Amino acid sequence: MVKEKKTEKKEKKRHLRHSLRVIGFILLSIFLYFWCVGILRTFIEYIHSDDTLIGFPKPFFYFICALTSGSFIIAVFLKHFSKHYLYCHELTHAFFGLITGSKISKLKVKEESASVNVSHPNLVVILAPYIISMHVLFVLWLYGCVVIAFPHCNEIVHNFFSILVGLAASFHFVFTLKSLLQEQTDIERSGFFISYLLIVALNLAGTMTIFTCIDTISFGYFIKTSISYTFDTISKLWVCLFQ
Image (tube, rainbow, N blue to C red; front, side, top):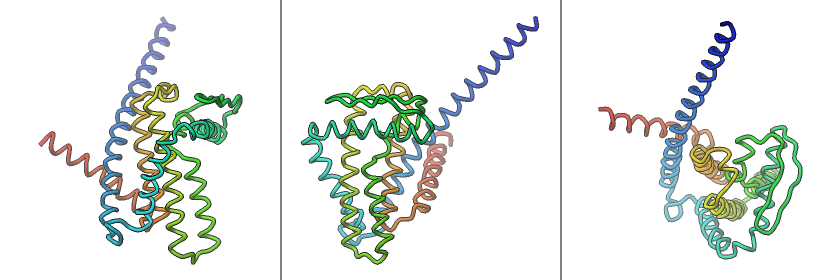
């Protein structure tokens, strides 16, 4: 009788934990979806905020030109960059695995496949290569070093680094899109729905973060405005559906 009660309590706790996970998953998914909308609305507002060059702020304009032209070039010569991307992809897994306390072993890169063993893979480690570009981080780090060393550097330097960041982002954009169009065991392990929502939302957030580094928009303004637009969109949808 006592054993049955203990078993029943354990079962209730298990069901409660499962229910809380489901509710948390649903709430996170809803927030991520509407946050994507909020970021896009912030992005549109940002574009219209300055008409210094064909409706675009200058560094932003150079970034977009580099991103689009770089994406085209990389798409044309895709095979020549594939092995380099595989190295970067697995090294990103390994890097974030080390940060989160995992042990790394057996990094293998072939012509069309690659793998690395991470002792304790989690959502951050699994999705990191689809969200974070090591090339972009390196260029932004280099840009930061130049700005610190030469605080009065002219506009040409800022525009030059905007182009470099755009080219680095184009590499990440093309290969992330290519990877997501193929069958990925990383995505399967994490769950397709939440993985794709996280990838889209955090890539949009990452793009806006780049703009805070190369242009006049502040990171605080971006976060505040995107969250404000997120809840504004949710409230408007609620009004449309229930009133």
